[in-house]
Image 1 (cartoon, rainbow, N blue to C red):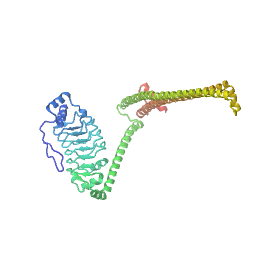
Image 2: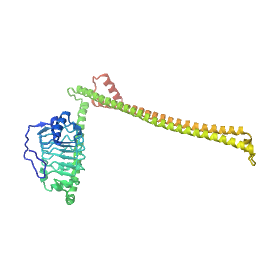
Image 3: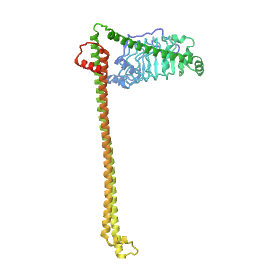
Image 4: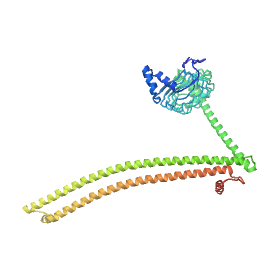
Length: 459
């Protein structure tokens, strides 16, 4: 007998026709076919060819007597998952459903909230009618807008304070929890969560917001800050106490000459294990650096090819323009020579008066005029060719310079990273050895450890 979440509905018991089950391929296939009714022939074809689970965005599995959430990994693009009215006790198997927007786990047997760390896109979460005592492990749900956790066992108002971190939360259902029966629960909750639009299916009016803000907001803001400060202080004190106790034990061993059975052997084993893990870490860092080198080299190769293509096309364009200039120069020179011949012929026939003396010399000596014209033509061609050569050389020099600089910078960066990794290894190897062994009078270590010891003592 299925139950749906209602405004005042409670669920005294649930009945299931089948024995407890887990999600498998057959259950998924049947559920998907039920969601999208097909003819008998179409269903038969789908069953034979198989369903492409990656295209499914909505899945309804209510009232299936499901005990364990499994086999949902093929539904990588699922956005809405309905698992209400089942026997689920733990939230699990959802890590790959990173596109999930709505999740309904109402009417189950869930006691602890967990397994939601990967669902950062989740906007609608229903845990109505379960056995939840405390709200926790929801920090990653930064997009949560609708949250229903009514008909559970929440009795501490700190659960409401916990919801203050969800800035996008607009609709909240906490009805039928012990906490909802406390005096001024509604005004308390509105004061702590001023962005709420609906609380327990009722609209949060401006009048309620104003009243709650005036009476409770400052009180609970201060209480929340005090709780947070106390928690942080407790964590710091606990960590400091652990560190102090840890160092005190080894200090007593070194200063008072205390000996614990097997302590030296234990320290040796710890050091060997420490070195092995440090080596694995260094090997991983080196491998990652090699991967980076390969990627950068591939990028540089592609960049060099692309920029070379651009430069070559630009050079071709320049050469084409220079060829056009040379053609124009040739045409100008030919026309100028023709003009000179015409002037000379006209001078021979007409013997113009009032001609400048310098000009008359050229008209009397046509060979000198033609020689001067050719000399000017050669000079202009030389200038055109020189400009073309200089431009092309500069472009190629720039190309060689930028590719060489990129290659050189990558080599320097790689050497720096490798040197940092080596220094990191040496430093923490000495730190580990110093922490465990400095102060021991006589120990039988291998040669490598002895050399490390002398190096550390020397420093």
